[in-house]
Amino acid sequence: MTQDYLGRIGNLIRDARKHRGMTQQQLAEALGTSQSAINRIEKGHQNLSLEMLARFGDALDSEIVSVGAGPTHLRVTGPTTLSGSIEVKTSKNAGVALLCASLLNRGRTVLRKVARIEEVNRLLEVLNSLGVETNWLNEHNDLEIIPPAHIDLSAIDEAAARRTRSVIMFLGPLMHRAQEAFDLPYAGGCQLGTRTVEPHMAALRPFGLKVVANEGAYHASVDSKITPGRPIVLTERGDTVTENALMAAALHPGTTVIRNASSNYMVQDLCFYLEKLGVAIEGVGTTTLTVTGKADINVDVDYSPSEDPIEAMSLLAAAIVTKSEITVKRVPIEFMEIELAVLEEMGFSYELTEEYLAANGRTRLVDVTSKKSELKAPLDKVHPMPFPGLNIDNLPFFAVIGAVAEGQTFLHDWVYENRAIYLTELSKLGVDVKLLDPHRVMIQGPARLSGTEIVCPPALRPAVVILLAMLASKGTSVLRSTYVIHRGYEDLANRLNEIGANIEPFRDI
View (cartoon, rainbow, N blue to C red):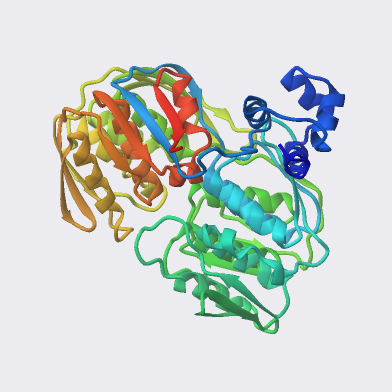
């Protein structure tokens, strides 16, 4: 290697080490070498083999050099029988909301056990480009966030912002922290049909925010003289819409009433965090929130987001389709009760532990142990509803569950325009699935699942549904271009491997 190349690699290693919050000595111990060797490598004074670069990548959880750079694929060998126990990670949707909400606080925020997923990575890139300092503190994924005195939107990382639809939740905090006018790039993320931003605009208009969307950006202006004069009634009970309204209300020094609010898990987590910031909120867990905000927030705060009910459902679905007995730990039961009730009607047998509290001291958790069960299709259609109904993001998992159940399972995905279409990819694995219209599918089970190669659909939950079906399929399957799964799940393949799956990540060379 040339000296210039060695120097650039050394800089990459140093930056990745600091990002992980490790000292040179700690990295040396992880690699079984000396601190002086790490120092020479970071200065570009030592040759490195590809094997050593791979070891650095593993120790730092960062791909230092990519051979055959390109999309990651998964090779799945089945059928699989899972065993043992697996813990549910903290909520992806709560994590991204809390990252956005951290902009409300001029003080230091520490979020505990944040899911290290691509959606979070993209938001961190956006925050860093705004001047926000972020640091991973340890191997437990505790994240420190230190905002700048002034936020400069002119340097925003547009590429990162366009890869996540969560960027729209910057509107609520930035209308208070930015100048009177600012631009945000259009949001991206999952491809689930047309996502109107009008409910967000209607929720924020009473705070003086006006948004015009054109030329690939949201052009926002704020009239600080306009404040809510009456309760804000949300035109849809959306999670992110409610979160935007909450964040706008948090820095409004008065009392705001939000009606038809979502009471879903990520909204409750946001409320608990805002309360730690000193914002008074009445009605958490209901559809009417009364928020008494503050003119300024400058506190050092420590918060632990609760566990992810969608990941919990994913793991239970993995157990069901592979007819396995596993224990899924730290399941937020309040947000899984309807799903478990539907599964019980289908014949699913399971055991629950006594309830205990999550690290936030508010969310109720249980451990769920699945039992081998012979399932029958539900008599009625399976459809989502706002909390406390069956979660919108948990509906797709009933497609793969229906594939192993006796009879016809009818799913009605009324929220998204195109998501049901992606479930038809299950037919390539041998599932008898009929698309009745863009919102409704019928699955005839049980299916004889057989391995094949599928390109990952561009929607997160249908992509995971296909991966779970591959676990139960005979032979070898390949799921290509799995970035969308990494958007919402932390190290899912390796975690499934730890309880008996046979999933091999690979790249084309």
